[in-house]
Length: 384
Image 1 (cartoon, rainbow, N blue to C red):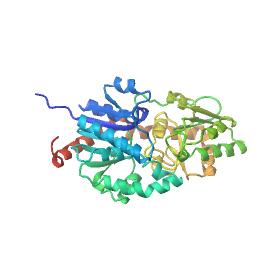
Image 2 (cartoon, rainbow, N blue to C red):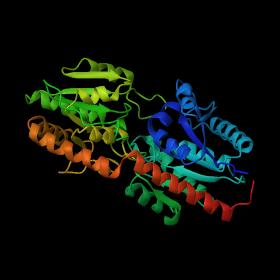
Image 3 (tube, rainbow, N blue to C red):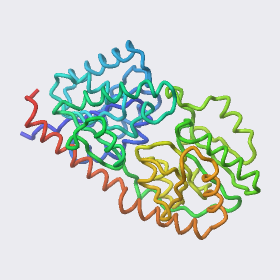
Image 4 (cartoon, one colour):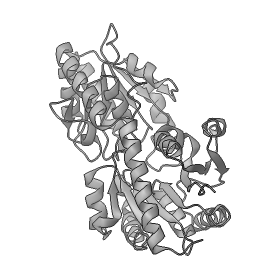
């Protein structure tokens, strides 16, 4: 009789985030023989998730809520799912699923992987609410990571160092740089004709550096450097750092600025662009920059954790300080005026993605990690 295939459950806040950021991992696991299940709040992604052969478990939860009653309700529904489904391994994607999923799994024979993608709002934002939450979240993470069956997954060395400062043992922290990108599907694009365009792709959050970016664009315009700024993405009402709709609307009326909103055709955005920009305060490993590099676009980003993993100063990118429009405008101006430099940096970025961040390579790394976690579980946990 064939042994049962191990059951892997992804716990994710939103269906779109799973499809956008964790699909390559899930496909690699499925190809390696895992039964892949996805538990998430469902908006429009149900058909796509099921089309890949994954089993979907819709959740009714409020992402980002700190209301204790909401948190308890989330824990209850996830614990009910875990007790019914009996997964061998649960991959918690993000800070909220890591907290909810770890508490829901207390006393259950499940190996847990808490993927902390950039550490989240509490550790990134300068918001007063974030500063209040930060010490509590640090203590909670340390507590949750004490159990033998729990491991953490980070995307860059800075986040690994941060977890160690919180008291998480080094041997319980795994580092895999993102989910990778499909380098066969994402091919280098020729530069478009006409006015130089700079593209930002991501959620419209203050922590992503959009305000300094708009200010840098205004500074360039005043100095006579014509550059079109494309902003692709929506505000995120569940995140306290979301840019207010009225402010986004004001940007729509600025000269040479296009606010594109949510865009399904991301390749189309990069096809219109000459330069990729992400002036964020902190990232895990930004998918937008990985894709931009795969398409052969040079990058201007902030010299912060996550960004500097893919944006390497003088190689495929310019790195600038966070929250400072002046250097940001200067770096964008240099690239806007030098097509040969853009070509050189763009080609180098493509090579970095091929060598280090292909979905095939990252998929094999995550499958190997799953295997180690299940082997460790077999020695630590009683059989279900």
